[in-house]
Length: 510
Ligand code: XMP
Image (cartoon, rainbow, N blue to C red):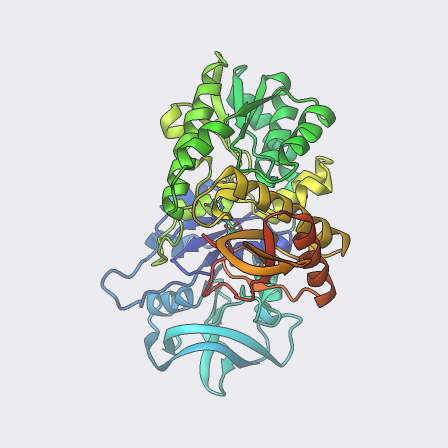
């Protein structure tokens, strides 16, 4: 399969380069900046992209690629730090810019570059850099300038070297996706129209081969990733796929029934439900710290899963719905981003269980997994569902998790979801859910004074969960949700709407 390779120098935008190319139906993969040239060649790329990164080419420890990449004869596109690397490597001059440039800039495109084919005149571009190219190397010429004079793009077409100081992958850069596509199709001569479904038969054959006749265990959560992975695996190995669903007692109204309806009744899979609610709730008794809750849930999950898995004697593999962003994160240069919450998935399982791993989605982004699911004829309700965190409602009941609080939250959450769906908002937002606040406030119902819990409604739009904006739900819809919750859910007398974005808040409240 034709592909473009991206070498990652640590930019927060590297994944976006891959996503833009793949949206243009160009298959690409990301490798660490220092991938040996043999590894690069073994993937037979049509071209290379050097990503941006936080370093300066003059730093002692500045990340550099294997020097042999420059003599492969492959077209290379340097982006931001990647451009500075090319300039430095070929004898140009890079220096600190007078002021760090961050934000939109007007770009003037000079005539003639194939990178800008079909893009005329002036466009707005996203800059984020501290260094800049002051003088282009011999043999290169400037193809675009920002702010009237800055060198914002340069190239040496004879050597197949192209470079952009700005970020074409960032949404704010006008026609940026077109520039990347021009590089892949016009310059690297990438011809195919890749789709995730092009991997379907290869994926299924791969799972079958890897399993080698053994049983494969799947921790099915009902989320998009584990569901698509399970459907793929079932196509490959049929009854040898053994799905386990752990009921933590922290699920939403109807979650367990939905799982049974789709996977057991519709698809006919062997699905084992491990009901461990009592165990989880017992261990969470009296615990109020969010991180403690996550740890307890993570460990208990592994314990329950492990016990169930041991009942399947010939199980040699664990199927996981690991996605490409997690894979990239574990191989690329780590940025300075701190762990804000320790996210719990079933990620801790394999080390403990000493089983082989089968990860059929490890080269896919989330939207591609949905596309794959569609080509497998999976129901839209499964593919388009909102993300639901591993620790479930435990991080939406603030403070101590009790059966009474869970019951209240579940009912309120059901009402909210029903109304959001009925109003046609479900597909337009990233997540919508209720949070139970462990404070009581005074209200009046009928002639009686009440003293009950508050429910916070959280509803956000986002593309990847990293940043989010609160959704501007119509007042009529908010009114309906609020009045239904207060009248139908015993124990709640007040409903508030969370109007904070991420950052500074997070999506979940714990
Ligand atoms: P935050 O609250 O960090 O959430 O803004 C970002 C996204 O991650 C989900 N989330 C979790 N998912 N385990 C998970 O599997 C967790 O502990 C966890 N905490 C947050 C959250 O629902 C949102 O989609």
